[in-house]
Length: 240
Image (cartoon, rainbow, N blue to C red; front, side, top):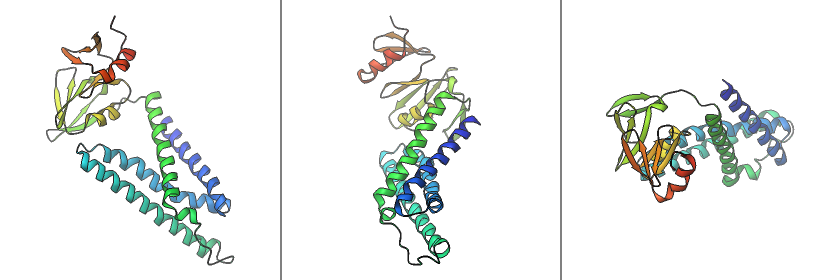
């Protein structure tokens, strides 16, 4: 509940600040507040659909899905902007200036994209911080061999990338295979899991640095690559 309240407060503050920005485009305060709402649905759609697109294990499809999401969000935003503008022409400013034109900045794709990116990225950083500060016990759900699997985060020992598949190994010795890329698993599992190799992501609660470039976890020894060696030694204090 606290996380939801903070997120709602963020969006209220974001809409207020956007309104202040739009007052510089010859909008009154209430007009700017209404106009800023045209960015809200598209920003929320960007926050939801972009991470979904990035989870596609196929790199080419992931890039195409990302492009489609961005284009769809931009089209949505411009449609809403023009609908809001039309409402101002026919209702708010009907007796003032019926031919009042859309400000040039709101017709500029770069300006519109910048506002959407700032709103969505701010939400991303906030959610990431909230997940770290207020961790939840919600199970991790994924598909393995056409079956829906739900696991507690702490029951996962490590995740291993094997060619086009990723294998999830649990404390009980069970293994599940999945098509989601290991980088997406890294984002999904978040704090408590550490990338130690391009092919391995481990649960830091169970990992022991048994040698400078080897981690023991369960009954498995996992190599530590040079790229991740420094961060691994910083996080894991068991060695030496």
